[in-house]
Amino acid sequence: MRRHRTDWLSLLAGLLFIGIGVRFVTAPMPDMMVMAPILIFGLGLAGFVGIITKAVRKR
Image (cartoon, rainbow, N blue to C red; front, side, top):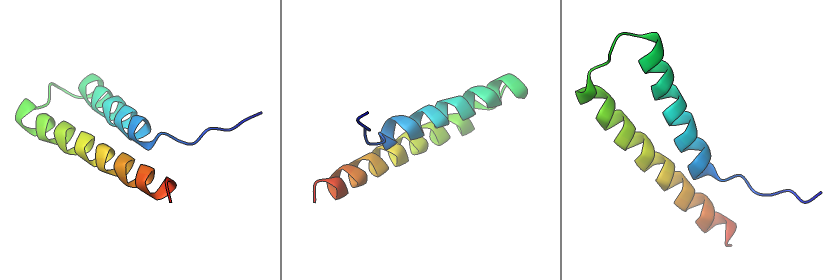
């Protein structure tokens, strides 16, 4: 069996969307002025981690 490397960008983005989805389901409607920057920052962080891991793997 051949193993593949973890795709950190997809993993972190998926966890972010799951967390935001759970927040919407369990609590009253959150303020979009708070959730939008959290989403954008989280996706930016996931992209940054993905770029860094790809650069480290190429060495």
